[in-house]
Length: 231
Ligand SMILES: Nc1ncnc2c1ncn2[C@@H]1O[C@H](COP(=O)(O)OP(=O)(O)OP(=O)(O)O)[C@@H](O)[C@H]1O
Ligand SMILES: [Mg+2]
Image (cartoon, rainbow, N blue to C red; front, side, top):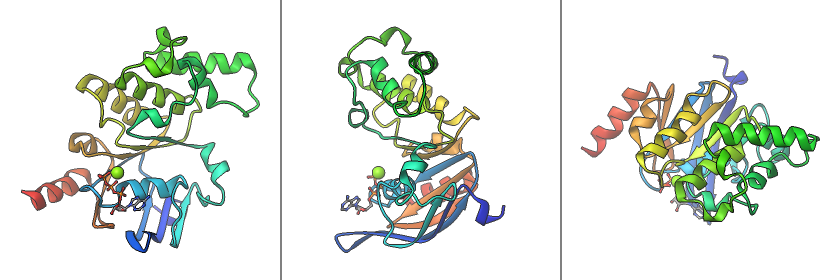
């Protein structure tokens, strides 16, 4: 892989909050379809994920996603990148399930019919079709998480960044969400997770520790090293 062409490219990217380093000089080039991110609490995983979509700005080094600067070219980037959080409540913005998914497609020049068709497709894909007219705020936690994912996938992003998207879910919903994230060849995914079985299904795994990227490589090897450290 020529690292200049990689979809995700960080060079000595660092972040500090209130003078405290959250990420130290991270250099990595990633082109794999499924990118797992692991590490203990406070190790910098969410900060890394937020760098990729411009929610956090690097105060040193560079970050490029699809060749774009996520902060300065955020609008352009967000047309191609979707972000899923572990808490779906922060992502639901419209009263009903159908309206919430349609909201993602606003301002893209689509007709009302095109939007309706895309919403139908996304709701079908995530098993939410029967809930289209239901109030989004009355859904269960797992249903909300499915809705948040539908609202991301409806825009057909080429990259999905998911920060612990299964943290609140039961085993069945966890399997459904991770299936949509990992098994759909239509998008690349960065999956931050404490579920090492999910990480093992990725093509590459990054491990953060104390704000540093300490390992990046073949999933089993990176996960084994992480588990040995805490054994
Ligand atoms: N908005 C913020 N303001 C101040 N400090 C922050 C902020 N966000 C993160 N930090 C700090 O940066 C460090 C890394 O946090 P981060 O959220 O990236 O960790 P994480 O690996 O995602 O942890 P977890 O597994 O608990 O989600 C922590 O020390 C945290 O306190
Ligand atoms: Mg986190």
